[in-house]
Length: 288
Image 1 (cartoon, rainbow, N blue to C red):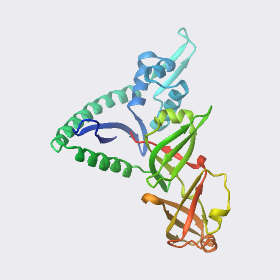
Image 2: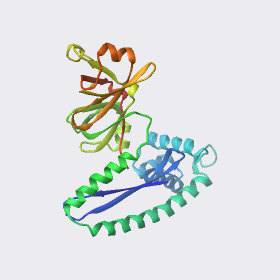
Image 3: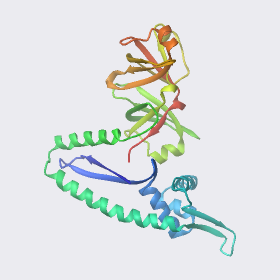
Image 4: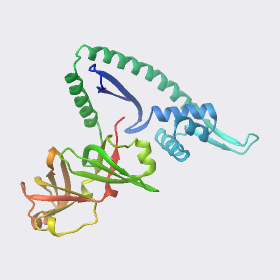
């Protein structure tokens, strides 16, 4: 079980406190309020279609969530019956019913915690304090993210180009450069991606290609992401090296290249280079 709190300020100068709650199975997220609400709706309606409609999900999105929860729980939470006098239906297992009850109890305690945190924060007051807490707690939430992707690039969604199957999402980084990702239309909806939403772009270091010297200006590439910066560090290994590139605004991106490439490209601290990777190599995430 994990809980995260988020401070936010609106038109009023008072400091506000909000929070989100989710459950984990091992190191994987089992579900938050939406998934638990889906389980509860299945129990109430006995129908995936009805439950999906009740929580604002697509039919496919509901089944994807159910499959994920079943897998992460290590046992079925939802069972689908076919045939019979009633024509079949969908039911919750005893484990799912206990999970809903457990969630309700935890949610009550979480709500009490938020109320206490709000009372404590209110004594600080002031718009400046609100902005400081908003920034600090957003950063703490990002620091808690654990992923195997070496590169975690934080920014704000600027544009979304809609497609029939996939959407192209652009995220502005702090230094003004952008990262482009191609995700499914359903992922755009599920993540709540829209202009102005804060998001993180995850990119494996092995997916990043480095260009240096004359290559930077001479080559024309189909890869949508081309981030220019200066080499920060070069950590050599027996065969490969990890090279970090410092981008404007303080963002750092890492690439794994061979030692031979480090020598051939003249990759050394301070040298100018460009990190290149495909939009399809980018995974997007949002907090909450």
